[in-house]
Amino acid sequence: MPSTTAPAALLTLYDREMRRDARPEGPDDAVERVGKVVRRTAPAHGWNGVVWSGFASAEEAEAAIADQIAHYTSRRLPFEWKLYAHDEPADLGSRLLAAGFTPGPDETLMAAETDALALTTTVPDGIRVVPVTDGAGAGQVAEVHERAFGDDASRLRRQLLDALTTTPDTVVAVLALAGDVPVSAARMELTPGTSFAGLWGGGTVPEWRGRGIYRALITHRARIAAARGYRILHVDASSLSRPILRRMGFTPLTVTTPYVYEPARWAGAS
Image (cartoon, rainbow, N blue to C red):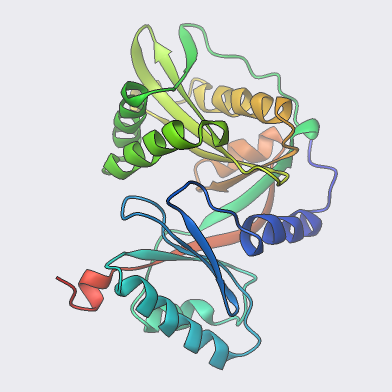
């Protein structure tokens, strides 16, 4: 069944806890509040970018865009400006595009309260779900990701291994095995001091799709989140996963678009 909290209230809480009051995700991750921007600076293989902005004018936005480009370019770091549809000014996406950012595919931010979900989905016959706790498991997650999505997952492997090593209480990663063969993988990021647990990944190799593995891994992670006291799940949903999540009780909150800036490409870094 759907969440009992109104979508607008969930979005307001998400903006405050996960964006404006963002917390470092590890010992090498720095969160800075600079003017009307909250940004994250991490190692090159980590996630670097702007998680929140609150501009009162177009002039403020233009100045902040230039400042962030200077900050990350001086460190030779590509970065992402994670734009949400309700961010101001309304033409912020166009301003980022004009400044040299490249937009990625739109995704729908969806959320669900764990106590409102009917966590009855079972693991399909012939599949077992196992936790990922070490480098070998992180490597298998990366392999599944590459087979499922067709892109390089070397950064994902390093990021996951870093989290498992330095902050294991903030990440849950799982593999779905057919026999001993990994056929699906997913992870969950837990943010201490907040209401939210984030669902990420959820990739299944092509030949095993359509059998309920994706739903089973959502249910598996949701149960863990609830047991650890996190009352809201959030996910950036693609067009493929959005219908499944809606049927499971997730509510759309807004649309998010990643705008990526590459210093080496745009600033002539060597």
